[in-house]
Length: 452
Image (cartoon, rainbow, N blue to C red; front, top):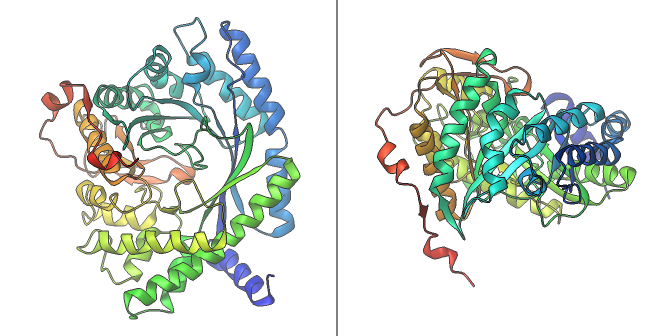
């Protein structure tokens, strides 16, 4: 039973510490929408999304009003479109992206994820067609997000896909150069992608998921940071316990919203993703948490260790509050979306190499990082390969969302607006990995994949 003290604590977290439900995401299976006739398939996709998600935004807004809990985004994830479109006789998949965009606008959601392909072990015809269409698809839509999974611990890393994704990121930036390469902010390259992630841009509705479900992503870096102030100077195990207790309370809020949305929409409740997803708002920063633990700045020696403590404590606290914790659940470190990360990057205290080390212990990977517009596709592919290797060897999800900003160089600033924030263009190692990338083939799965 929730007592008066818990209610007052929750009100304070919402009112003063930036606690919010970052997203209610409805996952929708489109596996029954495939058709040899592309136009018919697109119509079926549009109709199904509108039918299933027609009340999603209205329901989320009603829950906000009644419970006083901010719900920042209402989103949709769908079956990876490469699986749906493959039976279509067309070579160009961009019309599928446009159908998704129309449906997203019709139901009023903020983003729709799932213009995706899973190619960790190789390409099908549909996979390759979809990937080659990504730049145009993201340039010609507003709300559609795309992701490609290039590796898993079980399969290894598909280096042909890594090379192709380096080229895809580069082309996407060029086609959206009038927006500072914004298309790349809607494109994620994964290793070990999860099927129930409610966060964009990497969300898709996996083939192991039900017909339709509700997943909720909860955030609260400001709440965690404030709680740590009461443990200032205490041993790190005490700090970890403080984070666990705070994560427990945050997850309870997410569980409440998820169950309420599930009941009202008549859709099964999937998971609560307890990811500390920051914003560019002052006081809503993962970097601030790491500095509250005692670092003079994020990026200092000890940053990776502090992040490991934070990530582990968040997961443990969330698991105590809900039996349905899933998605990614941990701490995100997107540069452009975190005021503390932005400040450290601008001052040169935080580098891509340090961020890469941090991804070994956090929820995802190199996220929302602006790099020089003239960065070669092979270098981008090398960055993707490094992150995929970390995910593969450590049996964790890693990802890359970098933005080569056309016409910008190191030190310039680029603004993406809204939750995407702004970022300084960060330097990239100029040594070329081209010969390595162009070898292609597959990096074999590591020994730890043989766990049966």
